[in-house]
Image 1 (cartoon, rainbow, N blue to C red):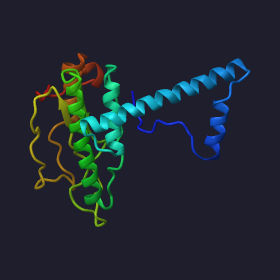
Image 2 (cartoon, rainbow, N blue to C red):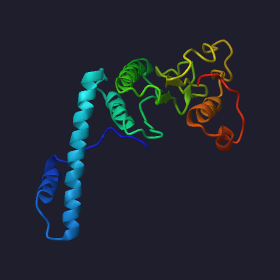
Image 3 (cartoon, helix red, strand yellow):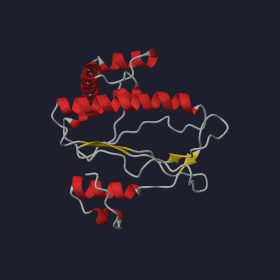
Length: 218
């Protein structure tokens, strides 16, 4: 399941007004009436969900940003015990002005994860939820001349939940770059394999088609 924080029904402008008139008017056609009722029911559900998210923002200290709202929505969905939920948080491709953007993004991410952890614990779900934060690509450590960095290889992975805490792989090896890239310390497929084997109860080999060293995080 992939979540989006932009759940809404168009209500503004001329188009929104026209839609409101249509949906508030009973239809003679059975199909049109069914569609009308479905839209109204969906809108009511969205309003209820939005109210729940707003309450979570206040109760658990989520940042009142797009990232914070995504995490609050995630907490709501987790109560239905889905197998996997996937969030996308954009804005990290910082080829320019990285310091300012990363400061805000990392602040929102850290505050959001902390609030999510509080929310999960308040609902006694901490033994059943594992959160993994990763990037689809890393960044080079050297500045590119535009106040940012370019795409790189190695990148951090953060796990939150019933895991063995600690820093795995050590600090970034800035003195032994590989063609300008940070050398990889832990193969991300080892993380996948361990989660598949020990958390999901799958045979990781059947998914990854190869055995990878265990790290001991789960």
